[in-house]
Image (cartoon, rainbow, N blue to C red; front, top):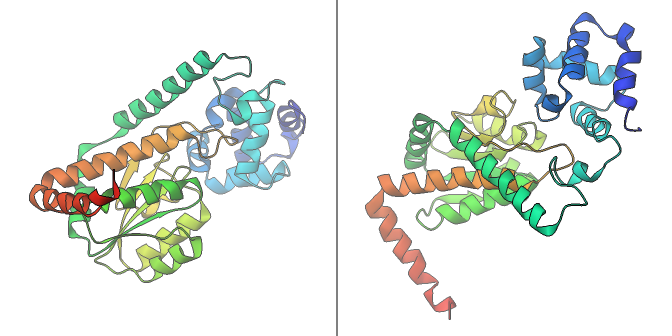
Length: 285
């Protein structure tokens, strides 16, 4: 599609939309920049319709789904400048190195500030209670979120022996299918719409395991399975999957959980931290 095709197509299809779909079209035409960073559930809520209406809207426009629609929207909004598609909304190909550094720093700081604004101490305390009472803690994440889940496992492995992470998607599904009511899943999904991760937490829920969800979107299908939902504040466009600002905000939440757990279980955590540190001391120069 060329850059203006999406907006032109929406206008051409005005007579083909249902009344509910037209609400989606009207909102999109008024606030395309906001829609670019919304989940399908967020857009549906803003328009006063159901998720299925937004999905039908995408299908009416002959698109594969909501993510495909957002990719076309991103293309339509660039006005011929494709640099922001895969870089960011702020960075241009003509920016100097110092400008790139400054803009990236601003993006990361903004993500952290947004995360801090959305963070509720009560949710952190609930999450710590779940960690304390868990027989075993499984970290889950797929795609770029797998790296975050693995880093969380490494972090907690310094003070807890009962943590686990499987990098393979099939193994994650198998692990979730064997969880029990005394187990805890800590799952990461920026979009909250990753099918594999949703399936994993669904299996964990069916086995009555407790679940901590870390995501951008509170009303996502993924977050609906969480006993505790922690929100990360980072805007990631459809062509910017794996944006570092999203990882940084998620890792900040991991650090909050680790530090709070350490604080409330100081004697055990301090003893274990010294033991694990000593175990690798001879690996260092």
